[in-house]
Amino acid sequence: MALRPARKPRKPHSAQVIRTERLTPHMQRVVLGGEGLDEFAADTCTDHYVKILFSPAGVSYPEPFDLERIREELPREQWPVTRTYTVRAWDPEHRELTLDFVLHGEEGLAGPWALRARPGEVVRFMGPGGAYAPDPDADWHLLVGDESALPAIARSLESLPDGATAYAFVEIAGPEEEQKIDSDVEVIWLHRGSRPVGEALVEAVRTLDFPEGRVHAFVHGEAHFVKQLRHLLRVEHGVPREDLSISGYWRLGHNEDGWQASKRDWNARIEAEQEGAAPAA
View 1 (cartoon, rainbow, N blue to C red):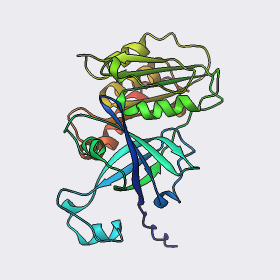
View 2 (cartoon, rainbow, N blue to C red; view 1 turned 120 degrees about the vertical axis):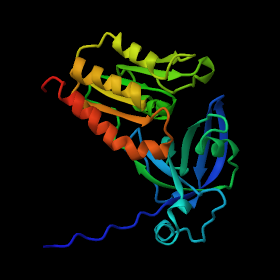
View 3 (tube, one colour; view 1 turned 45 degrees about the horizontal axis):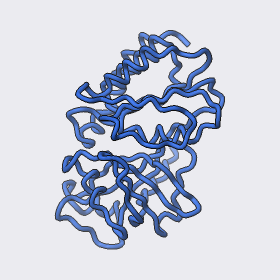
View 4 (spheres, one colour; view 1 turned 90 degrees about the vertical axis):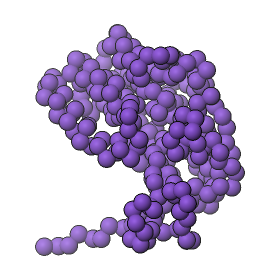
């Protein structure tokens, strides 16, 4: 039996903070650059993402940075912690990578870092990953998400040709969180206020008068409302699985480590439940 070739170790990219910008009260932009991005590219998907590596408090690593060696020689609690962020923009000419971070005060890991990041600071990350871009052959597009999905939704809208039919629903805390997006598609901003996360999104999609023709949909954000919209689209509207990019980016009550550990099983269970009830293609 032929042996499989050994898996080539993934090498992190290394970049420097170029500049930062406060977009809204709860959204911080960080732009990365430097020679470490010479082999980076993120120009095929509008939901490209990277996994930023953060060292635990009090832990430093020798240079050159070697992730495989760190994982071989150090105890797990000293390994870098990863946080996943969507590529808001990639400028291949200037080799600049733009990431937007949702801020929750001092809560979390990446948000506080982004708020304090200063030019010249070194950032290491894996990626990019990604799987979605608006299908130009679709008759219309549906894009739905909370703040965590806003960078991907914005990038997707900006990639659509003029005149494309699209409905974009983005739930945010309030009017102060609205952003300018370079697209002729009108974004429907849903102000959450004191309502549960995603409730307004489910209501908006449920009451939408679906146009005729094939839809290509992108639905991402908090796992519970994503579950409801998966049922609505797959079971009630019969959207084929291949025309639907849908996943929980996060889940209430879980940090990213906990959510990523359970996400595969959660999605598999929900998909099995709903695929059994979905109309035949």
